[in-house]
Image (cartoon, rainbow, N blue to C red; front, side, top):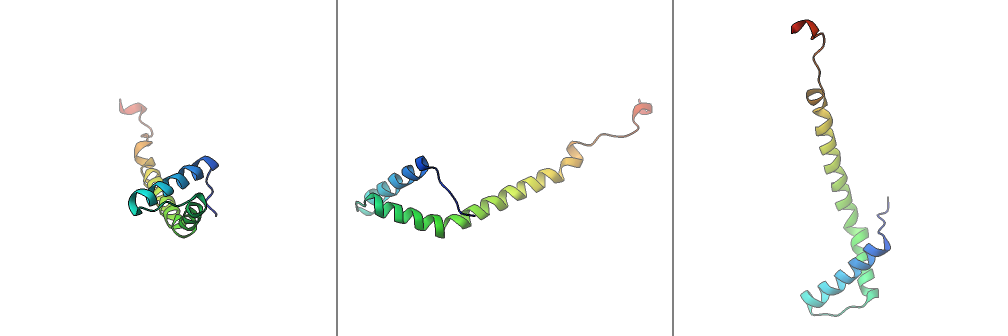
Length: 82
């Protein structure tokens, strides 16, 4: 599954990459180079981060489902126990 960014997020990331290179490496890079860096990160690094996020969400959901029997339990035949 390819990770897709909105146009707005892509532009913001490109600007952030340009700023990073300017401030951290004292190098001004243009939009094309910034886009290439972003594309590399999205293809090489993005899937690992995405997969970890899915695994974390899945583990969280499994924990919540495991608690259903505790949090949603109702004693049966409790009318006469009053």
